Image (tube, rainbow, N blue to C red; front, side):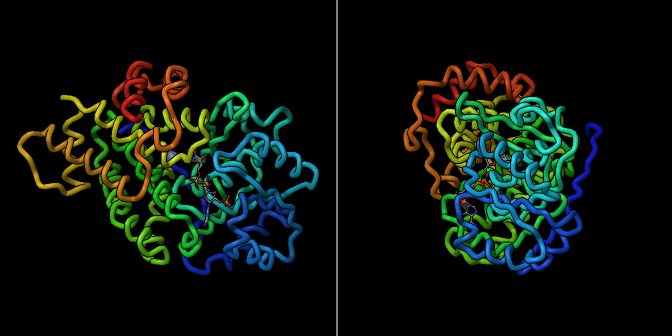
Length: 386
Ligand code: NZQ
Ligand code: ZN
């Protein structure tokens, strides 16, 4: 196990009605609030009105219309509003896109140049305005982590940035807020949670028993509860377990002490940069193909553990057959959740494969992945997805 620093300082208010703590979470930072939200789901499900009532003592400036795959243009507008109105604290109400946008706005407030610099060069992030979140989609873990992913569609770039100073100060996690999610967002969100776990579970480091067991438990949680949430959108137990899984999957716990690059995420970021697709759908399509591509004598043992401890498949004498059964189960699971499982279903063809593969390897550092990948490897994975 490598040395690591773990500092997930976000105060979590978890459960039904916990939004009542919003004034306390906000006002400790000040009363000038930038409220950041997306295309209007928080207006339709009542969160917006609740926020306005609870924060009646605050001055609220609004930044709405944050796109899924948030754009740098929106970040720039947010920075402008923060500077103009001397904002004290940013309240992000939405999914990962809204929270990520808020984080980079918070960093941009203390930066004199263009906010895109902070995406390309995370070491330019110094201070960040306090971020408080109200989570409405279980997926990214952004509610308790240091990451933000911002798109610049003009140049087909979708890049991750990060700073310990961007970790939210507080997050309100009310599972009932997930009830209004469209089924495909519940499914894609779960695929994202699972991918965050896979990216750390399938790593070279072997002496991380505790991280591996945490990972297996979280994967089992997703496999158990996503189908229930899809069938019964207002099943509190299912929503609560998925919501907490999203947070724990990417708050630094599962990946602690496990160095090396991720694989499916850099590939997905290229898909979104060119085709503006839903992050979790891209991951669900790529993941089983990546698993098949990297299955070999060195990795088969890990896939056997995955088959046994996560899927609880009946044991087989041939380890490769057993590993493949687990990969089949993964693919089947995503399909049964209603996720389109080929590129052709979501309008992607091979036109940009070469440039996407080159960028994924270079920007994502795929040479340092669990199984190092070249541009040709990525192209062959992409071709399997067609
Ligand atoms: O915009 P609104 O109207 O709010 O609608 C959103 C959006 O259309 C809707 N939605 C969210 N909560 C809802 C709801 N609709 C009804 N009821 C609710 N309760 O869902 C749509 C998707 O929202 P979005 O925020 O884009 O989804 P997600 O949370 O999956 O975030 C995806 C973004 O996060 C990045 C992704 O790349 C992508 O840009 N990621 C961020 C990470 C991080 N910060 O650590 C890590 C991830 O790997 C990921 O890369
Ligand atoms: Zn993700």
